[in-house]
Length: 293
Image (tube, rainbow, N blue to C red; front, side, top):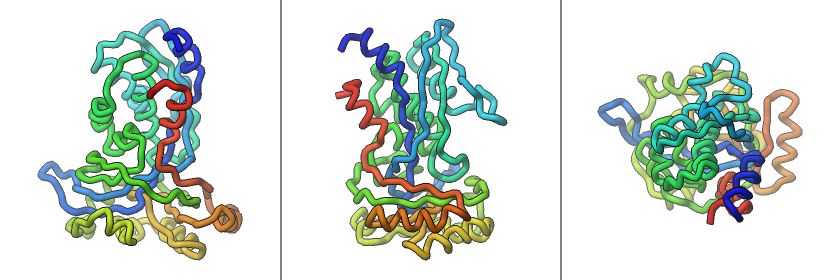
């Protein structure tokens, strides 16, 4: 595939920015700078935002349609593109079009995923040839969840969430409920009664069924709708909180069971039916297009 063919076909693509779930979240300490030390497990689901990158000649980075209430310069995709330009001296420009499907403020990582897709795809489109490790390093400056989306595979994570180890998991059907609230992550992590000294566990402990989320109690105390969603979903399967929420989720052994839960819940809740994925749809797409080996 020639560079010209690559440019034309890849620029025309709609690129996925998938959601993630935290299958467990333990807070095992706190750094002197206030950041919490975590153990968590990330898995992707096939619910995605979709990004299209339009080349422009003036070297500027802009949005096709800014998100209401968010200054264009503060948008994570714009910041990610400008970060790439600053890190490499690239003088190319881009207009970024975002089809937003992931709920904002839900703990599914939508903004972080959009930023990661921007870093990964523009690295290819602009021919910058930065390593995955360098892209993860850049991504971490945008947010603690960005590196796992750059990494592109289900991961056991430690540190502030940036120390990643690939983990192969079952890929179950998933129901996600988005309650009518936005959980303030900073508020949850600042709560005095938040558990900050959970005992560290091993991957084998998680596989054996230890998948507590240390934020659940604090979140449910402050957000009744999250508590209500957990109760509603628990009628069908074990209900869990992803990150600090607001979204809650449950895994199902069969599509039929997940569809049954979806049909029962959809009239009262904002609910999504999805499939767990170990490989990010972004990297599946890149491989299919032979943009990466």
